[in-house]
Amino acid sequence: MSDWLGPQEWAAVGLSLKVAFWAMMGAVVPGVFVAYALARWEFFGKQFVNVLVHLPLVLPPVATGYLLLITFGTQGVVGSALKEIGVVFAFRWTGAALAAAVMAFPLLVRAIRLSIEAIDPKLEQAAATLGASRGRVFFTVTLPLMLPGLLAGMVLAFAKAMGEFGATITFVSNIPGQTRTLPSAIYAFLQVPGGEPAAMRLVVVSIIVAAGALILSELLARRIAAKVGQA
Amino acid sequence: MSVEVQIRQGFQGFDLDVSFEAPAGLTVLFGSSGSGKTSVINAVAGLSRPAQSRIVVSGGVLSDSAEGRWVPPHQRGLGYVFQEGRLFPHMSVQKNLLYGNKLAKGRAEIASFDQVVDILGIGSLLGRRPAELSGGEKQRVAIGRALLARPKLILADEPLAALDEPRKAEILPYFERLRDEFSLPILYVTHSIAEVARLATTVVALKDGKVDRVGAAAEVLADPSFTPMGPRAVGAVLEAKVVTHHEDGLTELTANGVALMLPQLSHAIGDQVRVRVAAHDVILSKEAPKGLSALNIVEGRVQSVRSGGGPGAIVSVDTKAGRILARITRRSAAALDLSEGVTCYAVMKSVSVAPQDIGTR
Image (cartoon, rainbow over all chains, first blue to last red; front, side, top):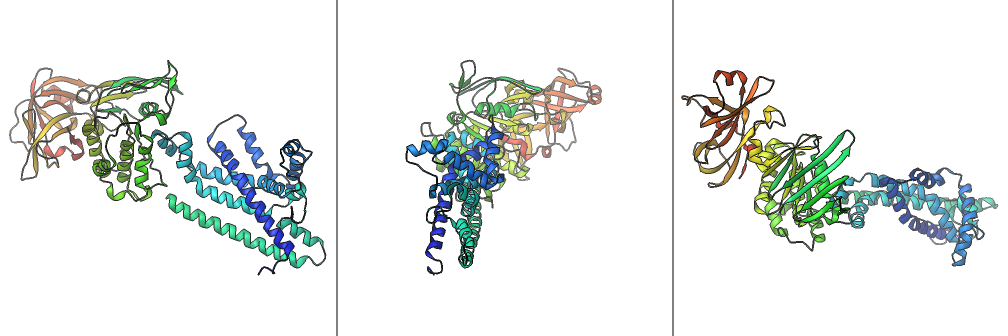
């Protein structure tokens, strides 16, 4: 089984899983925060935040990647500051994760926001009258009730991160073992003569991972919906 | 053990300006929809923050806009029973019941978990989820959840409005027990005159954002000029005691020595009950009627005759059993020459008193 894929191909699959996992994990907390703010709060500049969050969804991925490069690159405003404390994104797998997280963020926020908007604020009021502080209301009522949407959003974000190509290759290039994720590897194999079989094998892996993610999210959502009593 | 409420708030096209004091017992905030009753109860709960308010519950200041004091809802220590129950769908009944209890460690217990479960008859529901409960069961759990939060005051916002008649009849007695068995003030919002008659110790009637009437329930309901829901909803409340259950299915009551016959009640002999007698079910007679099928004939003196523009008049009759209101036509009032001080007989059919109009005490 393990020799079905060559070492380079395994490296790409492993790297993609790592990048997608950390992109998802890194995006989830800010995703919940932004989704909650957009769903429940009225504040100055709300529409601006909404547009900013959704921009990676509609912008050419290459443009997003370039913006990341000039911001988080070693010469960039944020990148040079982060370099001082030893955090480097440019041409590292962490940069691929950052690009994937940014690209997946709108999908994550949309899914979570919808699930928050489906929660009756009257339940949160009821919890408050029973003595729960805002934080406790969030963790005991809001969060459990939005869990189906949250998990669906996370799986969606993971799948999107697995497939992210344009922003990644622009921001962190296509370095084998470092930033050569699954889509980058497929692209690279297609550039060399005789690379098609390897590209095909990676396409199959992509299909398996993507389908698996969708099935998993469906199962999780159903399980939780039944538990939450909204099935 | 009292509740002091002063609220002023301007809404679009509607000003709320309410001030009242609720003594111990169950205080009903009564009024039609749009009268401001839910705004008042939400301000007491801290779910809204009116421009000007002063709210004091049992000596504790929850809100005083003059001093800039405002206690957030989760620190108010109140128990709120909502119209729709608002149980947490992702928790079992048991977890719902204990949600507020865990957060109320500092306050004195009203009743233990086992007592509450027993009183409300929800022992068999503890493992279920709210989605598996009927409307009546949900409200019982909601009452239990509020009680177990060890509140200083129970708030109830039309807790029966979403239920059908049989379910209302199922839940009403629990509020009577709440009122009678725990020394806990209750602020209860409703637009149902029947609920006022059964439950209220004190009535605060609201109209267009202002207090229309405040007073003991029996007094307010026996006031013939109080017709908030139109003349059809008028009816006085008699306090009576169950004497005996007769074999033919009637229950004999005594109201201050006057015997009353009603269809079989479920109350035990010796129980105090309140009987609401709808004014349109009362016939007046100038002489002691004979050969009549109605079983309840009470002698009294006309206290007042009130009529508006329509064909009807409301005659208020003072009897030994208490004040009775009768809705008759102006023509009849004139024909019988009913005026203040005249002796007359109030006639009530036993079967016209509906079971839901009979409550404890």
